[in-house]
Image 1 (cartoon, one colour):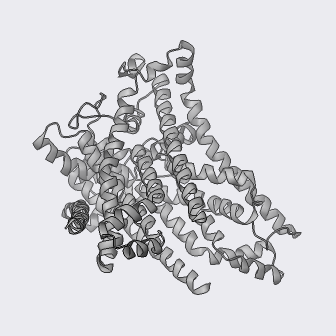
Image 2 (cartoon, chains in turn cyan, yellow; image 1 turned 120 degrees about the horizontal axis):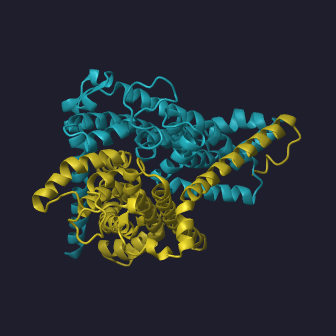
Image 3 (cartoon, helix red, strand yellow; image 1 turned 120 degrees about the vertical axis):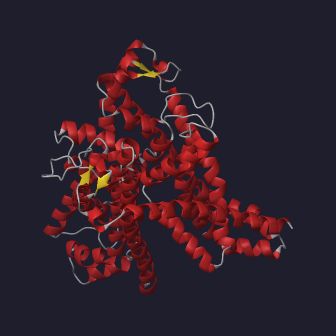
Length: 277
Length: 298
């Protein structure tokens, strides 16, 4: 009896959670589609965003994302390679870098926003711009990207390194031709994780890339990211809920497709590793 | 790190090693820069408190009137703690129940669908949860107990946000418990409920705990969703239906116009948040390494 009661309780909790999650999703879908049209994606916002579209905002979002990735990916990959291939075993510097990365991965995004405002916007004089927003996001996604790449590289079997050495390959060509291709799925997964996080970010962009919803003319122009647009529409614009839901739909679809991609890549990677070993 | 790649005399290799270590030093520097800038920006504020010797005023209740130079953060710190604790109180049992359901009761197809949904929801941006809370949850609560935008709304929205994480990490912690334990408890003729609650859950507790701590850090650091539904009145959280303002929301709201000491006080609260998150991730790390040590011995 107690056993059956327990099973029912667990089932009840699952149903409760699934129902509320579906409630959120269906609201975003239904309300979003009610206001969505293809021209919504390309036209300029009119009347503070109540009508019109999100064209310039999508462009700004993509620019910010691009800057963040352009800064974080090479740097992150370099750090990951150093940590897994070059750092002397038990080097204190490497251990400390790892710990710092882990801690920074958990720091609230609003704190990155504060840092970005103080450092990029004011200290480096970039002002409220796509550039300072993108660089702030780069700092934010760097830790998680480095950690994913590093674990991917570490997971490559040592036999491959020995094999490369036996073939007389230099370290650099072994990294380029063997280790990086072998760790590619992890690298791509880290990248996509970073993209998902950067696209969803609002708090870090409020005081770095700003609110301006015009089409950005240069990287030093202020531009409004999609997530910031949703926040502004729902909090500061009365009657903006429809447009906010439609923007939310666009954002969620963007992120879900990226996340699914990451997930399938990670799965594939594990399957392939099982075959190899 | 590896045996194969110990020392190389190739010039390109050495150059590359130097470049990569420079990059790492740069990254480490960048990370230190974040802390340094937070300290630097909040220094005027911290120093003035240090000199005037009323450090405790920060935490004693004297109200948050930044324009008059009164920076009592207690209401917001308590609100942050109340929101986080409330969300954890709801999300932890529910998330655990979901993990148990996923691991022990659901059919493979159901479990797959459930997992997919949880993964999906874990990726939804916080601002979307905030929007949903603002347009759906808050009006519902208003009908019941005005004003609606309240501690309760913040707790519920945060619960939904951290639940997928807790459920998924707990499920993987449960899945990594050695199957011998389950088989042994079955052989002893234990009930299903006893097997799960008294054998499997304790065996997976450190994995569950470290997942829960990370979720706590996330709840504490969450800005947008809480900002949108909590009402943002600076006051001590006295009831579930009272509007409150948390530390993160305060930064987001006031940063736009803050000057001088006011701005410095916001950076100081950012520093405080960072410290709290460090503490949480340190504890999570300890719990995790302890579990690994236990696993090695066991």
